Length: 328
Image (cartoon, rainbow, N blue to C red; front, side, top):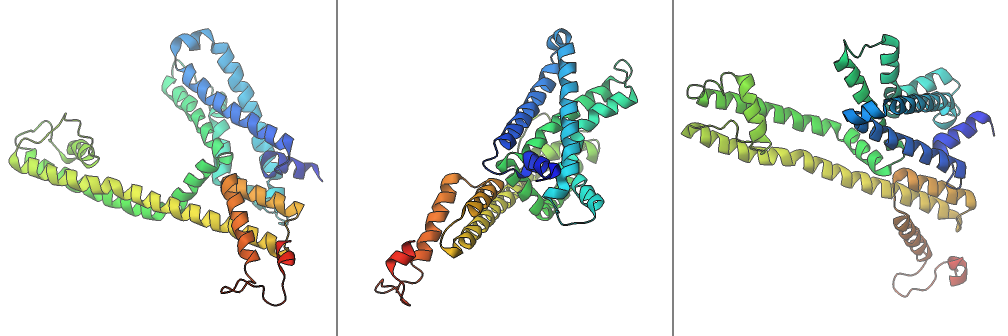
């Protein structure tokens, strides 16, 4: 095994029994979570004044680790993604432009942006705070280790078109509600509804059914219109939830079907070999399927295969098969 292939296994494609791969995962997960905690605590001024040196040292250590990780992933992705692709430059470019590649880059970019631009905290405090806040993007690196987060982003990616359509409809209703309340309330409340952009605040609060109550219509027409908009808002807010719920159901169903198909393929020979078991375990973790559910799938497939050659009426074996050979 080459060094690059071993690095690829350690970082992402390690076998289920690879202890060092697990340790690398756990180390990176803990480091990511510790970075998020550090960014939060750094905003507490007494802690920042007392432990400023520690925060800076920890940030420097984290950037070094994440930079090395990014470089190693970029170097070894040719073994993981497209091992037979002769154009390694394009393979690395495809990985760098992938969602996880961009997240890994954004995890270290703020530090180098501040370092190379020599940002002065006294003159550009807002920019420095922005760059520091961007370090929270390291939290998205957990999608590589969390099947649940991976499932969520997969659903969002597949349902992006439908969600965009729902967002367009919501934007249309926002403009319509803002225009309607502006026409009905401008004369009696010139400060609160002096123009449509100002009225958009009321429209957002009403459509989302939050109802802060800081700006309310006082005319009869305005109140009737507000009631209609509130009822429409309930349905509008339920639309994205329904889209996501349907998307989650389809995604979970597709993943279970994919795993079931892999189990059926592995059982074609009648037994699951060691290499097949490792591949199934790796696929199970990648798809985020619970181990108990995976075991139930295996039992169901075995049972279905065992009864495939039985007569559905009398239960006897067909084509000369016997119970012993089927049970094996």
